[in-house]
Length: 94
View 1 (tube, helix red, strand yellow):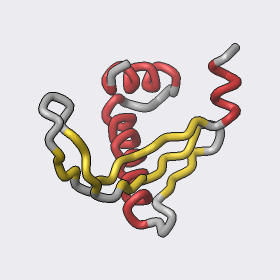
View 2 (cartoon, helix red, strand yellow):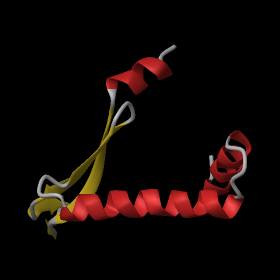
View 3 (cartoon, helix red, strand yellow):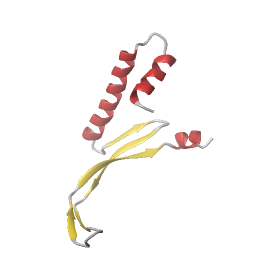
View 4 (cartoon, rainbow, N blue to C red):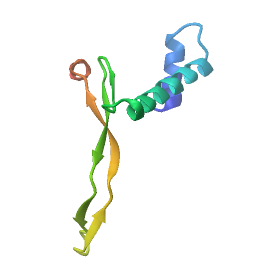
């Protein structure tokens, strides 16, 4: 599903709201999640009955190029992990 498709569906479900209003709410939600991940001391954002977004930091390390076998330096990096809430898991398994 694309962002546009999601906005269309929400606009149909909620009476009296325009696509531009739904788009503004969509943007605000994701900006808030990003800000919370940056600013929260635990770097987590939990959405009840949906799941938890969490920043994960991986230290710099040595690796090997699989083609040549040469040792390479892999820089430190940060990524976002997502853990699904049990209520969402059970809903999807129905």
